[in-house]
Length: 118
Image 1: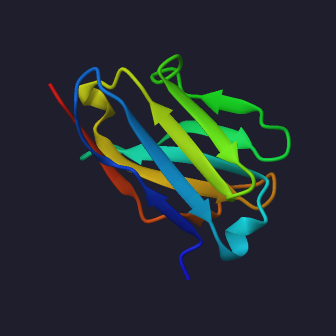
Image 2 (image 1 turned 90 degrees about the horizontal axis):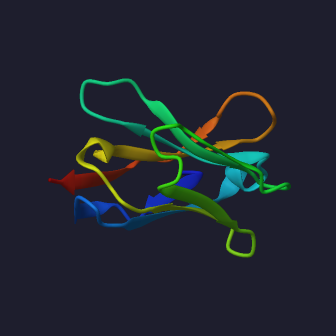
């Protein structure tokens, strides 16, 4: 069973917007925090944004701060990533992740592709 299911990726022109969604199921339903990571071809996976489920406190990488917004829908057990003012360098495979406790990111989705054309 895949604990995290992402949706919402696609192709967009520079300056456009996309909204990613991730639904937590199974083990990931009991979570301390959820977040988004991305991996571009030839690069390491990097943290994008995160949110603590109970407190709704957020964190962002410097590269997306002011452009991306992470939010949660507790009723639907989902986390969202609203991405505005997209740049070609935002092109990557975006992964949803969850922490069951305050430790490592232990649950991962399969990824959704975001491609930004110039």
